[in-house]
Image (cartoon, rainbow, N blue to C red; front, top):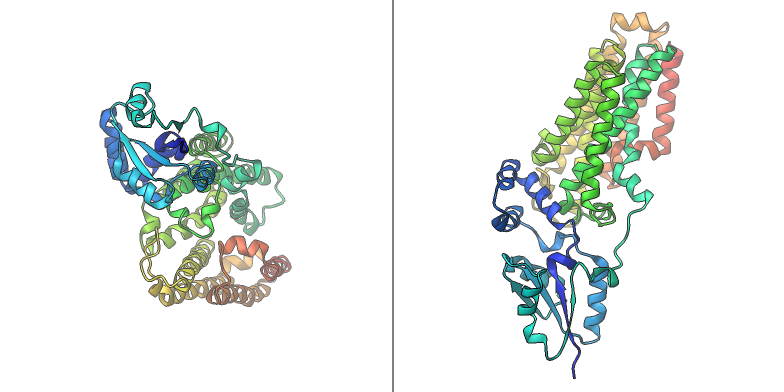
Length: 441
Protein backbone atom coordinates (compact mmCIF):
# COMPACT_ATOMS: atom_id res chain seq x y z
CA UNK A 1 0.00 0.00 0.00
CA UNK A 2 1.44 3.40 -1.03
CA UNK A 3 1.96 6.50 1.06
CA UNK A 4 -1.15 8.48 1.95
CA UNK A 5 -1.54 11.76 0.07
CA UNK A 6 -0.45 15.00 1.68
CA UNK A 7 -3.02 17.71 0.98
CA UNK A 8 -1.95 21.29 1.64
CA UNK A 9 -4.48 24.11 1.91
CA UNK A 10 -3.15 27.05 -0.12
CA UNK A 11 -5.02 29.88 1.62
CA UNK A 12 -5.28 28.17 4.99
CA UNK A 13 -1.71 26.93 5.45
CA UNK A 14 0.84 27.40 2.67
CA UNK A 15 0.28 31.15 2.54
CA UNK A 16 0.77 32.91 5.87
CA UNK A 17 -2.37 34.28 7.60
CA UNK A 18 -1.47 37.81 6.52
CA UNK A 19 -1.92 36.89 2.85
CA UNK A 20 -5.17 38.81 2.40
CA UNK A 21 -3.82 41.81 4.30
CA UNK A 22 -0.89 41.85 1.87
CA UNK A 23 -3.32 41.62 -1.03
CA UNK A 24 -5.22 44.69 0.21
CA UNK A 25 -1.90 46.55 0.54
CA UNK A 26 -0.88 45.57 -2.99
CA UNK A 27 -4.15 46.98 -4.35
CA UNK A 28 -3.75 50.12 -2.23
CA UNK A 29 -0.30 50.73 -3.72
CA UNK A 30 -1.35 49.99 -7.30
CA UNK A 31 -4.71 51.79 -7.29
CA UNK A 32 -5.97 53.46 -4.06
CA UNK A 33 -9.29 54.44 -5.68
CA UNK A 34 -9.98 50.86 -6.75
CA UNK A 35 -9.24 49.65 -3.23
CA UNK A 36 -11.92 51.94 -1.84
CA UNK A 37 -14.37 50.60 -4.41
CA UNK A 38 -13.60 47.02 -3.40
CA UNK A 39 -14.42 47.77 0.24
CA UNK A 40 -18.07 47.94 -0.75
CA UNK A 41 -17.98 44.81 -2.93
CA UNK A 42 -20.10 41.84 -1.66
CA UNK A 43 -18.05 39.24 0.21
CA UNK A 44 -18.81 36.51 -2.32
CA UNK A 45 -16.95 38.35 -5.09
CA UNK A 46 -14.52 40.56 -3.17
CA UNK A 47 -11.68 38.05 -2.79
CA UNK A 48 -11.60 37.19 -6.48
CA UNK A 49 -11.63 40.86 -7.45
CA UNK A 50 -8.85 41.58 -4.96
CA UNK A 51 -6.64 38.84 -6.35
CA UNK A 52 -7.17 40.06 -9.90
CA UNK A 53 -6.48 43.69 -9.02
CA UNK A 54 -3.38 42.83 -6.97
CA UNK A 55 -1.73 41.03 -9.93
CA UNK A 56 -0.01 38.65 -7.52
CA UNK A 57 3.22 36.95 -8.47
CA UNK A 58 3.89 33.45 -7.19
CA UNK A 59 7.54 34.35 -6.58
CA UNK A 60 6.59 37.12 -4.13
CA UNK A 61 3.88 35.53 -2.00
CA UNK A 62 4.15 35.13 1.80
CA UNK A 63 4.83 31.40 2.05
CA UNK A 64 5.21 29.54 5.32
CA UNK A 65 8.86 28.49 5.03
CA UNK A 66 8.54 25.85 7.74
CA UNK A 67 5.67 24.17 5.92
CA UNK A 68 7.60 24.22 2.64
CA UNK A 69 10.47 22.39 4.34
CA UNK A 70 8.00 19.80 5.64
CA UNK A 71 6.53 19.29 2.15
CA UNK A 72 10.03 18.87 0.67
CA UNK A 73 10.88 16.15 3.20
CA UNK A 74 7.60 14.30 2.64
CA UNK A 75 7.94 14.53 -1.13
CA UNK A 76 11.50 13.19 -0.90
CA UNK A 77 10.01 10.11 0.83
CA UNK A 78 7.83 9.56 -2.22
CA UNK A 79 4.61 10.85 -0.68
CA UNK A 80 2.04 12.24 -3.19
CA UNK A 81 1.41 15.95 -2.62
CA UNK A 82 -1.71 17.92 -3.52
CA UNK A 83 -2.32 21.67 -3.40
CA UNK A 84 -5.88 22.53 -2.40
CA UNK A 85 -7.26 25.98 -3.17
CA UNK A 86 -10.48 27.67 -2.14
CA UNK A 87 -11.30 28.78 -5.66
CA UNK A 88 -8.82 30.90 -7.67
CA UNK A 89 -7.40 28.13 -9.88
CA UNK A 90 -5.05 30.46 -11.72
CA UNK A 91 -3.30 31.50 -8.51
CA UNK A 92 -3.04 27.90 -7.30
CA UNK A 93 -1.53 26.73 -10.59
CA UNK A 94 0.99 29.57 -10.55
CA UNK A 95 2.04 28.65 -7.00
CA UNK A 96 2.34 24.95 -7.89
CA UNK A 97 4.47 25.77 -10.95
CA UNK A 98 6.67 28.15 -8.98
CA UNK A 99 7.35 25.82 -6.03
CA UNK A 100 7.48 22.57 -8.01
CA UNK A 101 6.39 20.60 -4.92
CA UNK A 102 2.93 19.36 -5.91
CA UNK A 103 1.76 16.47 -8.04
CA UNK A 104 -1.61 18.05 -8.70
CA UNK A 105 -3.86 21.02 -7.90
CA UNK A 106 -7.40 20.71 -6.53
CA UNK A 107 -9.87 23.59 -6.46
CA UNK A 108 -13.10 23.64 -4.43
CA UNK A 109 -16.03 26.01 -4.85
CA UNK A 110 -14.93 29.45 -3.63
CA UNK A 111 -18.47 30.13 -2.35
CA UNK A 112 -18.43 27.01 -0.19
CA UNK A 113 -14.91 27.18 1.17
CA UNK A 114 -12.34 24.42 1.78
CA UNK A 115 -12.48 25.04 5.52
CA UNK A 116 -16.05 23.71 5.78
CA UNK A 117 -16.35 19.96 6.56
CA UNK A 118 -18.85 19.33 3.75
CA UNK A 119 -16.57 20.82 1.12
CA UNK A 120 -13.58 18.87 2.42
CA UNK A 121 -15.50 15.63 2.43
CA UNK A 122 -16.60 16.11 -1.17
CA UNK A 123 -13.14 17.12 -2.35
CA UNK A 124 -11.36 14.28 -0.52
CA UNK A 125 -13.63 11.38 -1.53
CA UNK A 126 -11.19 10.09 -4.11
CA UNK A 127 -8.46 9.80 -1.42
CA UNK A 128 -10.55 7.72 0.96
CA UNK A 129 -9.07 4.40 -0.13
CA UNK A 130 -5.38 5.33 0.04
CA UNK A 131 -5.81 7.75 2.92
CA UNK A 132 -4.66 11.34 3.19
CA UNK A 133 -3.22 13.91 5.60
CA UNK A 134 -4.81 17.35 5.30
CA UNK A 135 -2.84 20.39 6.47
CA UNK A 136 -4.95 23.50 7.03
CA UNK A 137 -4.80 26.34 9.53
CA UNK A 138 -5.83 24.15 12.47
CA UNK A 139 -3.20 21.51 11.67
CA UNK A 140 -0.45 23.98 10.76
CA UNK A 141 1.30 24.32 14.13
CA UNK A 142 2.34 20.66 14.18
CA UNK A 143 4.40 20.95 10.98
CA UNK A 144 5.31 24.63 10.65
CA UNK A 145 8.53 26.11 12.00
CA UNK A 146 8.25 29.63 10.64
CA UNK A 147 10.45 32.25 12.24
CA UNK A 148 9.06 34.34 15.09
CA UNK A 149 9.70 38.01 15.57
CA UNK A 150 12.33 39.22 18.03
CA UNK A 151 13.22 42.59 19.49
CA UNK A 152 15.93 42.86 16.85
CA UNK A 153 13.35 42.30 14.13
CA UNK A 154 11.15 45.05 15.54
CA UNK A 155 14.16 47.36 15.83
CA UNK A 156 14.87 46.79 12.15
CA UNK A 157 11.22 47.26 11.21
CA UNK A 158 11.07 50.54 13.14
CA UNK A 159 14.37 51.50 11.47
CA UNK A 160 15.68 53.02 14.66
CA UNK A 161 19.05 53.58 12.96
CA UNK A 162 17.25 55.97 10.59
CA UNK A 163 16.38 58.22 13.53
CA UNK A 164 19.82 59.77 13.10
CA UNK A 165 18.34 61.66 10.14
CA UNK A 166 16.12 63.45 12.65
CA UNK A 167 19.21 65.10 14.10
CA UNK A 168 18.55 67.68 11.38
CA UNK A 169 15.86 69.00 13.75
CA UNK A 170 18.67 70.41 15.91
CA UNK A 171 20.28 72.31 13.00
CA UNK A 172 18.20 75.53 13.42
CA UNK A 173 19.04 75.49 17.14
CA UNK A 174 22.75 75.18 16.37
CA UNK A 175 22.92 77.70 13.53
CA UNK A 176 21.04 80.31 15.58
CA UNK A 177 23.52 79.81 18.48
CA UNK A 178 20.69 79.21 20.96
CA UNK A 179 21.88 75.79 22.14
CA UNK A 180 22.55 77.13 25.66
CA UNK A 181 18.81 77.73 26.24
CA UNK A 182 17.63 74.68 28.20
CA UNK A 183 13.96 75.20 27.33
CA UNK A 184 14.79 75.24 23.62
CA UNK A 185 16.96 72.13 23.95
CA UNK A 186 14.06 70.33 25.65
CA UNK A 187 11.71 71.43 22.88
CA UNK A 188 14.14 70.13 20.28
CA UNK A 189 14.38 66.78 22.08
CA UNK A 190 10.59 66.45 22.12
CA UNK A 191 10.47 67.32 18.44
CA UNK A 192 13.16 64.70 17.77
CA UNK A 193 11.17 62.01 19.60
CA UNK A 194 7.92 62.97 17.89
CA UNK A 195 9.49 62.98 14.45
CA UNK A 196 11.13 59.64 15.16
CA UNK A 197 7.81 58.00 16.07
CA UNK A 198 6.14 59.45 12.99
CA UNK A 199 9.05 58.42 10.76
CA UNK A 200 9.02 54.85 12.12
CA UNK A 201 5.29 54.65 11.44
CA UNK A 202 5.71 55.68 7.84
CA UNK A 203 8.85 53.55 7.33
CA UNK A 204 6.88 50.50 8.40
CA UNK A 205 3.98 51.41 6.13
CA UNK A 206 6.41 51.87 3.26
CA UNK A 207 7.88 48.41 3.89
CA UNK A 208 4.38 46.91 3.98
CA UNK A 209 3.48 48.53 0.67
CA UNK A 210 6.77 47.37 -0.87
CA UNK A 211 6.52 43.72 0.19
CA UNK A 212 6.40 42.30 -3.34
CA UNK A 213 9.27 44.44 -4.61
CA UNK A 214 11.37 43.75 -1.51
CA UNK A 215 11.01 39.99 -1.96
CA UNK A 216 12.66 40.34 -5.38
CA UNK A 217 15.54 42.42 -3.97
CA UNK A 218 18.84 40.80 -2.98
CA UNK A 219 19.08 42.63 0.37
CA UNK A 220 15.59 43.90 1.12
CA UNK A 221 14.06 40.41 1.01
CA UNK A 222 15.62 39.87 4.44
CA UNK A 223 13.64 42.72 6.01
CA UNK A 224 11.36 41.51 8.83
CA UNK A 225 8.08 41.92 6.94
CA UNK A 226 9.33 40.60 3.60
CA UNK A 227 10.93 37.60 5.32
CA UNK A 228 7.81 36.92 7.36
CA UNK A 229 9.43 37.35 10.76
CA UNK A 230 6.81 39.96 11.68
CA UNK A 231 3.16 39.55 10.74
CA UNK A 232 1.73 42.16 8.37
CA UNK A 233 -1.27 42.72 10.64
CA UNK A 234 1.04 43.42 13.58
CA UNK A 235 2.88 45.95 11.45
CA UNK A 236 -0.33 47.73 10.48
CA UNK A 237 -1.36 48.01 14.14
CA UNK A 238 2.09 49.33 15.06
CA UNK A 239 1.89 51.94 12.28
CA UNK A 240 -1.35 53.32 13.68
CA UNK A 241 -0.17 53.32 17.31
CA UNK A 242 3.10 55.07 16.46
CA UNK A 243 1.30 57.75 14.48
CA UNK A 244 -1.20 58.34 17.30
CA UNK A 245 1.65 58.64 19.81
CA UNK A 246 3.49 61.14 17.61
CA UNK A 247 0.37 63.24 17.08
CA UNK A 248 -0.44 63.22 20.81
CA UNK A 249 3.02 64.46 21.81
CA UNK A 250 2.92 67.14 19.13
CA UNK A 251 -0.55 68.37 20.11
CA UNK A 252 0.14 68.59 23.85
CA UNK A 253 3.77 69.72 23.98
CA UNK A 254 4.75 71.48 20.74
CA UNK A 255 3.50 74.48 18.71
CA UNK A 256 0.82 74.14 16.05
CA UNK A 257 3.37 75.05 13.37
CA UNK A 258 5.38 71.93 14.22
CA UNK A 259 2.24 69.76 13.99
CA UNK A 260 1.53 71.16 10.52
CA UNK A 261 5.08 70.40 9.36
CA UNK A 262 4.80 66.90 10.81
CA UNK A 263 1.55 66.40 8.90
CA UNK A 264 3.21 67.67 5.71
CA UNK A 265 6.05 65.20 6.26
CA UNK A 266 3.59 62.33 6.60
CA UNK A 267 1.60 63.34 3.52
CA UNK A 268 4.73 63.71 1.36
CA UNK A 269 6.09 60.39 2.61
CA UNK A 270 2.79 58.63 1.94
CA UNK A 271 2.65 60.20 -1.53
CA UNK A 272 6.19 59.01 -2.10
CA UNK A 273 5.31 55.45 -1.08
CA UNK A 274 2.13 55.29 -3.18
CA UNK A 275 3.06 57.29 -6.28
CA UNK A 276 6.22 59.39 -6.37
CA UNK A 277 8.64 56.51 -5.75
CA UNK A 278 7.85 55.20 -9.25
CA UNK A 279 8.15 58.61 -10.94
CA UNK A 280 11.48 59.65 -12.41
CA UNK A 281 12.93 62.84 -10.84
CA UNK A 282 9.85 63.41 -8.67
CA UNK A 283 11.11 60.67 -6.36
CA UNK A 284 14.48 62.28 -5.60
CA UNK A 285 12.93 65.74 -5.24
CA UNK A 286 10.52 64.27 -2.68
CA UNK A 287 13.40 62.64 -0.77
CA UNK A 288 15.32 65.92 -0.66
CA UNK A 289 12.17 67.68 0.54
CA UNK A 290 11.69 65.12 3.32
CA UNK A 291 15.15 65.88 4.67
CA UNK A 292 14.54 69.62 4.43
CA UNK A 293 11.21 69.27 6.23
CA UNK A 294 13.13 67.99 9.25
CA UNK A 295 15.04 71.27 9.39
CA UNK A 296 11.81 73.23 8.96
CA UNK A 297 10.26 71.17 11.76
CA UNK A 298 13.15 72.03 14.08
CA UNK A 299 12.64 75.72 13.41
CA UNK A 300 8.86 75.42 13.84
CA UNK A 301 9.19 73.57 17.15
CA UNK A 302 11.37 76.34 18.59
CA UNK A 303 9.89 79.36 16.77
CA UNK A 304 13.28 80.13 15.21
CA UNK A 305 13.32 82.07 11.90
CA UNK A 306 14.50 79.93 8.98
CA UNK A 307 17.54 80.88 6.96
CA UNK A 308 17.17 80.96 3.17
CA UNK A 309 20.76 79.76 2.87
CA UNK A 310 20.15 76.81 5.17
CA UNK A 311 17.13 75.65 3.18
CA UNK A 312 18.96 76.00 -0.14
CA UNK A 313 21.99 74.12 1.19
CA UNK A 314 19.73 71.35 2.46
CA UNK A 315 17.79 70.92 -0.78
CA UNK A 316 20.87 70.76 -3.00
CA UNK A 317 22.89 68.50 -0.72
CA UNK A 318 20.10 66.04 -0.01
CA UNK A 319 19.03 65.98 -3.64
CA UNK A 320 22.60 64.88 -4.39
CA UNK A 321 22.39 62.12 -1.76
CA UNK A 322 18.99 60.96 -3.06
CA UNK A 323 20.54 60.65 -6.51
CA UNK A 324 23.44 58.69 -5.00
CA UNK A 325 20.88 56.21 -3.67
CA UNK A 326 19.28 55.82 -7.11
CA UNK A 327 22.69 55.60 -8.76
CA UNK A 328 23.68 52.71 -6.48
CA UNK A 329 20.48 50.83 -7.33
CA UNK A 330 21.02 51.31 -11.08
CA UNK A 331 24.70 50.37 -10.77
CA UNK A 332 23.76 47.05 -9.18
CA UNK A 333 21.04 46.46 -11.78
CA UNK A 334 23.47 47.05 -14.63
CA UNK A 335 26.08 44.80 -12.98
CA UNK A 336 23.45 42.03 -12.97
CA UNK A 337 22.93 42.52 -16.71
CA UNK A 338 19.48 44.06 -16.42
CA UNK A 339 18.23 46.47 -19.07
CA UNK A 340 14.58 46.94 -18.11
CA UNK A 341 13.26 49.64 -15.82
CA UNK A 342 14.33 49.08 -12.21
CA UNK A 343 11.57 47.33 -10.25
CA UNK A 344 9.37 49.87 -8.46
CA UNK A 345 11.39 52.78 -9.84
CA UNK A 346 11.20 55.15 -12.80
CA UNK A 347 14.75 54.66 -14.08
CA UNK A 348 16.57 52.36 -16.48
CA UNK A 349 20.17 51.15 -15.98
CA UNK A 350 21.04 53.19 -19.06
CA UNK A 351 20.18 56.35 -17.05
CA UNK A 352 23.25 55.78 -14.88
CA UNK A 353 25.45 58.50 -16.38
CA UNK A 354 22.71 61.13 -16.36
CA UNK A 355 21.85 60.39 -12.72
CA UNK A 356 25.54 60.76 -11.81
CA UNK A 357 25.77 64.10 -13.64
CA UNK A 358 22.70 65.50 -11.92
CA UNK A 359 23.80 64.25 -8.52
CA UNK A 360 27.35 65.59 -8.69
CA UNK A 361 26.12 68.96 -9.96
CA UNK A 362 23.60 69.22 -7.13
CA UNK A 363 26.24 68.34 -4.55
CA UNK A 364 28.63 70.97 -5.80
CA UNK A 365 25.84 73.55 -5.85
CA UNK A 366 25.41 72.96 -2.12
CA UNK A 367 29.05 73.95 -1.64
CA UNK A 368 28.46 77.12 -3.65
CA UNK A 369 25.47 77.97 -1.43
CA UNK A 370 27.71 77.60 1.63
CA UNK A 371 30.25 79.96 0.05
CA UNK A 372 27.54 82.54 -0.66
CA UNK A 373 26.27 82.18 2.90
CA UNK A 374 29.67 83.24 4.20
CA UNK A 375 29.41 86.53 2.31
CA UNK A 376 25.94 87.32 3.63
CA UNK A 377 26.06 90.38 5.97
CA UNK A 378 23.80 88.60 8.47
CA UNK A 379 26.36 85.81 8.79
CA UNK A 380 28.96 88.27 10.04
CA UNK A 381 26.59 89.15 12.87
CA UNK A 382 26.52 85.52 14.03
CA UNK A 383 30.25 84.75 13.78
CA UNK A 384 33.21 86.73 15.08
CA UNK A 385 35.61 85.13 12.59
CA UNK A 386 33.34 84.50 9.63
CA UNK A 387 36.30 84.00 7.27
CA UNK A 388 37.15 80.75 9.07
CA UNK A 389 33.97 79.17 7.69
CA UNK A 390 35.68 79.09 4.28
CA UNK A 391 37.53 76.04 5.55
CA UNK A 392 34.21 74.17 5.62
CA UNK A 393 33.93 74.44 1.83
CA UNK A 394 36.85 72.11 0.96
CA UNK A 395 35.66 69.71 3.67
CA UNK A 396 32.19 69.52 2.13
CA UNK A 397 33.69 69.25 -1.36
CA UNK A 398 35.85 66.36 -0.21
CA UNK A 399 32.96 64.47 1.32
CA UNK A 400 30.58 64.88 -1.63
CA UNK A 401 33.28 63.95 -4.13
CA UNK A 402 34.25 60.89 -2.11
CA UNK A 403 30.64 59.70 -1.80
CA UNK A 404 30.19 59.89 -5.55
CA UNK A 405 33.50 58.19 -6.27
CA UNK A 406 32.57 55.32 -3.97
CA UNK A 407 29.17 55.05 -5.66
CA UNK A 408 30.91 55.03 -9.06
CA UNK A 409 33.06 52.10 -7.90
CA UNK A 410 30.04 50.17 -6.65
CA UNK A 411 30.75 50.52 -2.92
CA UNK A 412 27.61 52.48 -1.99
CA UNK A 413 25.14 49.71 -1.18
CA UNK A 414 23.14 51.52 1.49
CA UNK A 415 21.54 54.85 2.28
CA UNK A 416 24.37 57.44 1.96
CA UNK A 417 23.34 59.10 5.24
CA UNK A 418 23.54 55.78 7.07
CA UNK A 419 26.84 55.13 5.29
CA UNK A 420 28.21 58.44 6.54
CA UNK A 421 27.35 57.50 10.13
CA UNK A 422 29.47 54.35 9.83
CA UNK A 423 32.28 55.64 7.64
CA UNK A 424 35.36 56.76 9.57
CA UNK A 425 36.48 59.36 7.02
CA UNK A 426 32.98 60.86 6.84
CA UNK A 427 32.87 61.14 10.63
CA UNK A 428 36.28 62.83 10.70
CA UNK A 429 35.19 65.34 8.05
CA UNK A 430 31.98 66.03 9.99
CA UNK A 431 33.94 66.58 13.20
CA UNK A 432 36.33 68.97 11.44
CA UNK A 433 33.37 70.91 10.04
CA UNK A 434 31.94 71.30 13.55
CA UNK A 435 35.32 72.52 14.78
CA UNK A 436 35.47 75.07 11.93
CA UNK A 437 32.10 76.56 12.86
CA UNK A 438 33.00 76.51 16.57
CA UNK A 439 36.23 78.41 15.93
CA UNK A 440 34.40 80.86 13.68
CA UNK A 441 31.87 81.63 16.39
